[in-house]
Image 1 (tube, rainbow, N blue to C red):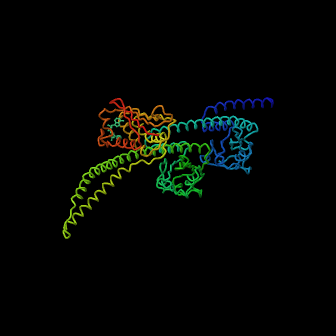
Image 2 (cartoon, rainbow, N blue to C red):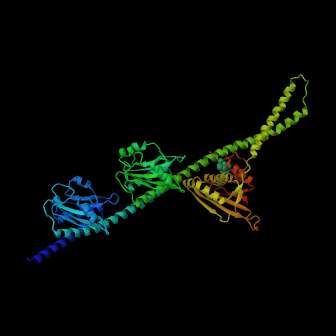
Image 3 (cartoon, rainbow, N blue to C red):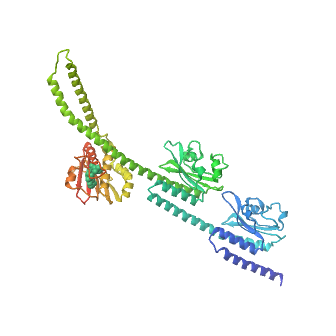
Length: 575
Ligand code: ADP
Ligand code: MG
């Protein structure tokens, strides 16, 4: 055969090989598997003894062996700085190196004994130098110029595969992220228990950034200390760690500056204090993002990895999203707790009011006979001879009656001081705020809650606290009349009385429920007899309070109700 023919034959063989290799390495979408296949094909085609694919880690800048063949097990731990070794040199220059005798090459760094020849070509993915593909042999001058050409061609093909798998991997991550966010959001909405929601968030934070541990710290009431609220993957040492001072801890700065902070290695960083715990628990890199609510930092969400790592913008964004969800979960729990508080307070108020009313009534009942006694006493005009001790007795009786009278007057004064403290009140805002408070409870009671608020509602002069108390009573009564669930609507509108008047004269707030309703007899006694109730835990005071509050506002309560047909309570207040 002529030399030309040999050359042609060799070229054909190479093309054929490449085609075969292409088919094999395109058979997977898994990045790690693709690299393994690429290397396997390269070593086979080159008739090499060993080889490796090393990629530049953009986070650390090191050249890391991602797949190897024929190398000792510890070779994959070999990390070269870019520029170090023959592969390192290729990773800097972007040019291939073909060495027939590495022992004569000062750049060479040994990955295994007996290597004599090495061939290394750059991996350029999407126009960027991202790694090195290299093969070794135990013979001198093992690789020809043709081999080099072939490996370079293989590297181009491999780069395409690598890029595809990376894109696919990214999409998979994104899909997973959305799945996680959706599932976390779902959990928050369904979980009554905030601890459960926070547990899911710390767990998913770990999974999504492949962290070893995740913790959520919350500010205490003084805003001076950060306390552990929830964690996933934390060991004993971390869990027993004392609270952190906001003023002088690294996580404190996250709260103070309301900005994420990351540390590549907390075990060696002097910004991180608990290095001892980090060492014991194998925590190395840290990313911490603030939990923000209404522009204020209320805590931090932190992930710790078991290796040095530079967190990408994407990772910071993901953790921030999870932090946002945490803040929502916490706020929701806080609102819920407030509802329970308010309810408790209401019961307390009802009892206090009952005592107040009772005291006033008793005082009133005492005053009348007391007045009579006083009158009679003075008309008796008791006088005894100067030395008679009864003079003194009479004086004491008079004095004690005055004392009694004073006490009675004081009690009556006190009962009269329920005068409202008036200020301009936007009823819609008040109703909306209450809606936030009761929405959760109503949903749990299976009650569909709607609001229909008039946009043109005039502002009225009123005592917001008293009105809130009255409205809350109406809502609770409505809810209690629907033990199996139902509908509750709150409607506000401007009212013109007389109808012809230009400007609205009143504001009406209507509470309509689909509950049990009331008989005419029940309705008649609704406000008057305040110690009657149809509920085992009721006080029978709620409506008495509503009646009094509305009365002191010079308003009216209208009741429309029928057994089994629900109830509408309309509160009419003057503008
Ligand atoms: P309590 O709630 O402690 O029973 P209230 O003064 O709030 O006391 O109400 C007195 C009674 O009026 C209730 O026990 C109930 O029988 C009746 N009632 C009040 N509001 C409603 C309503 N929306 N639907 C049906 N019954 C109601
Ligand atoms: Mg009540």
